[in-house]
Length: 443
Image (cartoon, rainbow, N blue to C red; front, side):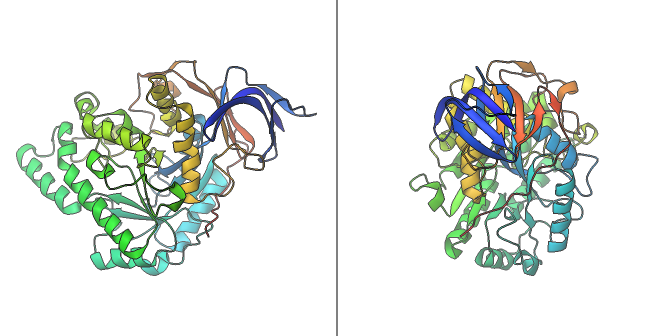
């Protein structure tokens, strides 16, 4: 049992000083002056309490790709960053495209995830029967790669897409990039440069047209079939105009996500960062970044995520055509957004909304995402004014590097509670207890 005293509680559009009592895995009481015998008291003076971040898009690389990362190592990085729950993607080895393989991942999560966890069911051109068996109360969603992926996870057959959208029992999350556009652009640049294409051409190869065309098709399919659609990692300003802010989030059938890298970097950073900011979809122009910010703040874009996707340094040091896309972000997601708070770009209340509240509502997660009595105690204690520099020796992801290396963040994560367990405190992890499986209250 823990009693957090006199802390600034950032929750549901307000910041109020108060006490929070945690008992077992839940928030027992919130009040102005709580006393509790036998509780471990934590002094919250001058600190801020956030609902734990819920990251709806990560790649933790297990099973089969564990030289890059695994559920244990990457969830450690998550917890150190104030991320209390994650939803992990199916493009592993073997790919998560049967109910048996999906359940095997949940078994790994139960044994190794330090944060709360859920796993997407993957779709292919020929596994619709398996997709339709997905338990809507225990699985976050169905993932469709409508753009370049690995193996047979690219779903590009129009009839298959139509069938999935027509019959999907739960939310579909899509990676939207048009494969034909990307292949044609890649061939053009390979003809000119061979394998060693300058990384600054990445957003020209995987361009606005590829993203907008694919997102438009997904939205058209959703509207036609009444499907609950969530489009991941919006990377272009043009795409933001596909979404609305005219109805409440709970009433939306089509939602969207912005990722940290598309809010932070632009194409001006490729000459310095190279493969370390090579993601799919690509980081694009500063104007695209500005428009994504505008859409995030006016609620056309609903949530913030990381798309945490580690690769080894050796892999990233390959030339363009062989350097994989993706990078580690989950340890630095909340402190990155707090840097934007210090810049005056976003309020603390809006950070809690976009990284916790809205994710819980978007996915209909049970009893998480808010600081409420009776809810699960997923919490992050933050010191807004404790600067620290990202260096190799403090990076928690297994890959050991970060696109933020050398940057000094203005704020730090002091403590993280996972379902009532003090999993991270003052730089140290307590790995004695695993996280819980997320459940979903879907009508």
